Image (cartoon, rainbow, N blue to C red; front, top):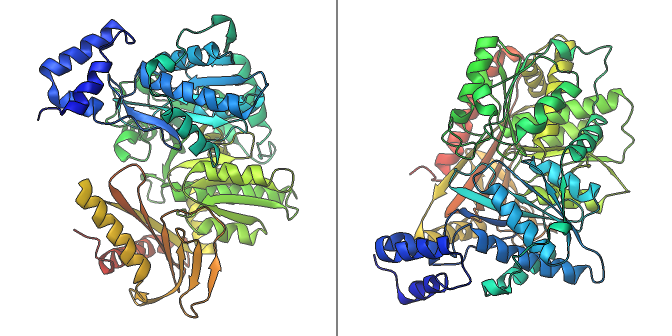
Length: 578
């Protein structure tokens, strides 16, 4: 396939004197030898979305490189200046272990300092939650972290935070996008840098972060025995190694083993195909170490240490991995139990979860007299709830099914460092009561009902695929099934039209959340089905949550099988199996 004239003209711009010789040489080579790569690199501009940039690294308008990062940073700088007129702007920048992350962080620092901003630049890789903390700790107007989370090694990304330490929400998200899109020429970017305006930071922020984190500990030294708990941890070649081991030690967990090969920060992620703790393959080495050492708890963080995967031994002595809903369940139950035991619940406390996360969290919170806020998918919406309730209500914790959790409000994004400490505390607390963390999970199911969740994604590529996904959403929205697997449909929530409909009476109530193309269906037994097109991929996602009764621990395997069959029935009834 040969590139069209539009692509060729865009590529020629990158061969001009505004670009360095290495870039110009690579563009020339693609034009002469790699026409397909030229098309991929220039057929569009890398989109600055509501969360920032994310893309494959390389030369071109559709790639992460010095120029696309510089233009994004200049657009951000223009908006920050407009938002805080007359103020001395302060910014903070962190980065993960990915290839070029340090380089992109320095490019961003140079652009911001050239605009007259004071820039605090971390001296080495740091977890994303520490960046969120640093924004508020250093009284910054905004912050940037260079990371592509758990994406493959070819990718990098760029996330923006506002002065509350949270990722951008309306109106700032769209306003920043508009400013970035207004940068049409590389000559509009101030690349030169001002070294006097760039201030290195490091261990002093680590200390303040850890000091604050320690105040959230809920353990009772006289009744828990954390030193007896054996933990294995992997940072999956990412930033978790910077803070997680020392945070666990600070919390009293001295028997912590790490996967040595994965302790080394490396953007090539040499020991895993994908550095994603949601994937079992990525957890193989840490599970192997757990088996060899007969550990009580498995923990692993993704490259920027905002998400955590956890594992433990079941009642058969087998090591299993928890899904995100199960980890969130254990965390919320532990937090609320300890708050109650310490007489800290006054009636003004709340938790928060995303709408696709297990309803078990709300059932637990209801029992403890704690309010639950449901938000759209994305942790920035949990942070928004925290900001809106600051000074009025107390946030205890929250989470999402995709392995992101937050304890307290001193960080305003998901925080795997804090989560590791609290998961360990929950395990030690359970052990002090004569049970394993797995047995605690089963006991929660016995008390509140057995909630089982699953997720499937259907990919439909191209224009025809996008149209098919749109039609699927229209059909589900306009023709909901009156019953599924013999269970009546009780409630339908349409987040695009912001309406909740009682399907028995047709009574409608307003949903007070931003519009989003998401549908939810609640059945008479409490089961939940969520349908959501992906905002970044040619996929439509279906989240299933079914509910059953578990009379005792010994019945778990049987009930688990039944709930799996129930989910399969829903999937087949909706016609989702190809």
